[in-house]
Length: 198
Image 1: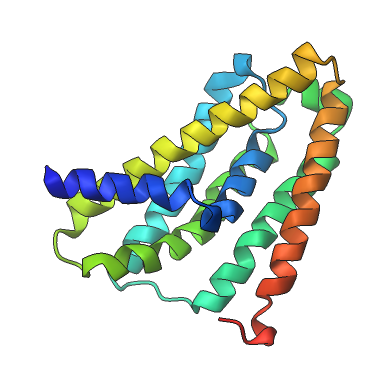
Image 2: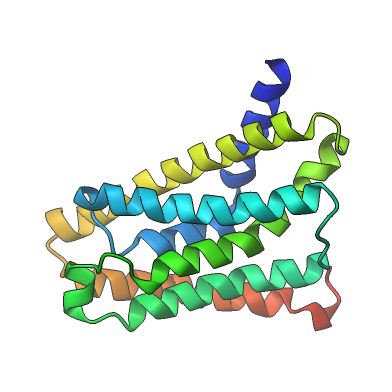
């Protein structure tokens, strides 16, 4: 149980730090178009992301999947860029009434695969492959709990702007997405593998 608690805490800390800003921005970009009443859709969205990163985290931790760290770190902000752009091209009706299975769900699953490879380096640096299954479970649950906290914060901020300050939802989504887009483009620029920083 002590090991479970340790890895659960490490999973939450892996998300709730300044170093995990890229993951936080991605979750923010995923959730911007939703409101509190859309919690079921958000749950599916976050679960799709979790499934994606759990698959590649498990494969990477088991030594079955290897990818250069510098390219993973570069691809992560590109997933944020793509998600922010997807938000920007949404029409008013699509933002106010998201379809049952919009493209963003597939973004969440596919981009989760990329994010999972980044988690693997942190995970394997702890103690290797001993007790892998239980530790993976605890680590993933910690990540999921932290992600849900981030989602709750994003929804609360959206509520303040849209419901209390009466900003039109389409403008809130677009303005926030532009901020996320600019931040992630800068991140991608600094992480370009050709610069030799990784």
